[in-house]
Structure formats: C-alpha cells, structure tokens
Length: 477
Image 1 (cartoon, one colour):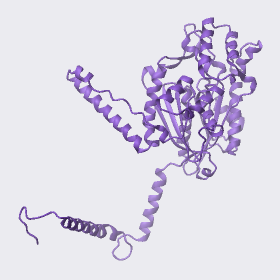
Image 2 (cartoon, rainbow, N blue to C red; image 1 turned 90 degrees about the horizontal axis):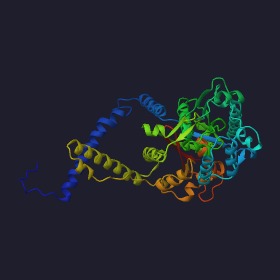
Image 3 (cartoon, rainbow, N blue to C red; image 1 turned 45 degrees about the vertical axis):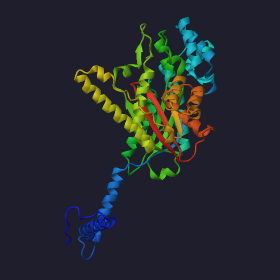
Image 4 (spheres, rainbow, N blue to C red; image 1 turned 30 degrees about the vertical axis):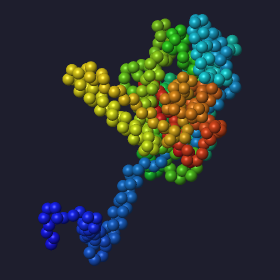
C-alpha cells in the first residue's frame, strides 16, 4: 500500500504508464471472463457449437432481409424519328402559319423563341402535324395521337428488349409515363397487347408528372423489384410524350413556348434485380432522389389550362426559373451525402447549421420586438458543393438553353459536363422525360471530350410539373 500526502505524489511518465497498463489488464480480464469464456464450446463455455451456428445463420438471414438487392440496367434504347418527321426552324414557323389561328405577333414571338432555343434544324414533329406542310389539314385526332404513340413506343420497346436479350414474357413489371396523353385503354395495355406479355404482369401508367417523370418511373420500378427480392425480376420502363394532341392554338404568350420547344421522342429502359444479371448489365443504380415542392407558386408554374378563348395548352409561369432553382437546391442537398466526399459534406452541413441558428435567433429577436436587430443578422449563403468530385458525367434535362446555362453556372460545371445536354437539345429538342436518356446515350456512344469508363458515375437531373426535381446516379459496370 502506498500512502502519500498532498504534493508528495509526482505524475511521472512511469506512473501514468503503470496506471494505464493496470486498467487495461482489468478490462481484458473482465472481457475474457464474462464474454469470451461463456461463448466457448466445451469446458467453461455455455453455448454449444450448434447454438453458435444457428446464431450465425440468423445473423446472415437478417442481413439479407434488411439489405436490398442491387438494381441493374440491362439496356436502354431511344427513339430515332424517320426523316419524314424532321423539320427545320423555317418549316416549324410555316406549320404555325398553316394553322391559321396565330397572329403575326405570335408568329414573330415563336420565331424569336426558336432562335434562342438551342434546338437544331432537324428535329422531329409528329406526322399528323407535319402533313400540313403538304397542303393537308392538321390531324390532332385520337387516332393520330395513338399512331404517334404506337410508332414511338413499339420501336423503343422492341429495341430495348433486343439489346437486353429478353423475351417480352420475361418482363414482370411495366411502367409507362406520358404526361399529357392518357388514353383508354392505357398505353400499358397497348404494349402488353402488342408484345404478348404475361397476364400476371404488374403494369402502371403515370400521367401529369411532366419532364421529371422518367426517374420517378425508375424509382417505382426499383421499389416493386425489391418486393421480389428472392425470386428476382425484370422491369421495363418507358418514358415518352405525345405531341399530336397538344399543339396550342391560341395567342397568349405564356402558352406559346410549348409550340417551339417540345419534340417527339421516347426511351425504354430494362431493369433487373437478379444477382446473375450483374455480369451482363450496363449500369448499376446507386441512388434516386425526388423532391416535391408544396407551395402554390410552384404548383402553378407549369399548368395545363385554357386561355381566354378556351384554347387548351400548358402555361409556363415567369417564376419557373426561381422555383426550379429552389427545388434543385433541395434535391442536391438530399443526394449530396450519398455521392460527395467528406471534405465537401462538412461545409454543406456547417452552412445548414449556421443558417438554422441564424433563423432561430432572428425569430426570437422579432418575437421580442427587436426587428431592427434581427435585420442586422448576417445572411449566410448556401454552400454549393463541388459535385464534380463525386460525379464524372451529368445528364441535365434539356429543358432549354437557358436551363442548361443556369445549372452549368450554379454547379460550376465544365463545358464538357453540359455537352451531352446541349447536343441532345440541338439534335432532338426537348423530348420531355426521355431527354436524360438521349444525353446518357451521347455520353455512352459519342462523347470524346470526357469518355465514359468503367467505374464512372453518371448523375441524371430532371424537372417536372407540380413542381418537382428528380435525380438519379448510375455506376458504369
């Protein structure tokens, strides 16, 4: 026993090391006597080998039940319109004149929009509208709309299944999104009937969800495939927009943009959650995020309605850029932790925390009648993380040249990052929800400035009415 008076005991290195080693010995002894020994089989152990094996099996089963199977993309295909569908800017303006419903001011306005749109001189319009260039009446009937839908959808479904080396009867889940054309029977029923798919197939037809609907469809297919965890399954996602019945025939400028920007297009994507398909898959789905705005301003910024003369169309609000920016900011904040390195996540988290604290302090000062003091609080700006550190390629919805320019500036992207979006816009126009797949196709097959390699990650970002922003990240296999 050591006895010492205050001030006589010195904390030397030797004393501290002796205390640390003594404490370590005590903990090791407790760990060995009360945890290791009881689990040993034979003498001194309380659990037999059979019990331990059973426990191990239960742990493995629990791990399998709580972990989702990976989602693989086996193939995708985009619609390539025949030459008879393709028109130049001058021909588009002539088509508008041939409708005999637009004023000269509206014609000039649409011509200016076309010049600034970023679309090329050979983009696709449906035959029911293009035929007015040949002195025929424009056909916007249900029959003409179905003809456009069948031509686009049948082509991409057949091509995607062929690339994936699948028979139509191997598809377990079918999801089709088309925002403005929702006939009866549905587009899903049309595909099932045409390709002779199984009678027990799960089919879902999504409408009214705008240009961001493709990744919503992918997310739905992913969730449905996860319910078939042990059996595995195949899903077919089809994204398109039908132009024929949606040509606006009025003169209100808020509605005229749709006549100059949207074009025919579509994409079909084949997904699987079978482990055996991982060897032949093109990509693996890493993450999908969807953010839905709930303000009235966001709800009304893309709105199908009738103008003062009862002409039906889609009205685009002047607030759409601001609404899209806020929605995308929330989406990027949500998906950031999944794709960004820690060095980028820390500033984001710090900024969010500071903004929250400043907001609470401001509210407290206002409740105490100190509005002037609350107004002097600093306004901490959002930290924009460098997504280039976690993402190799970007597929930004080709909603227009201004949209691409804005995102390129805000996310500090290089020109080669937005090249796929600009080329898709020029070659195909705004094909609505399928535009991100034309961009992925460009990255996969044509881009030389930033060639795709195994292990690269591709981010798709799209916007939709309502207002929503969707994003998805794919890993190149």
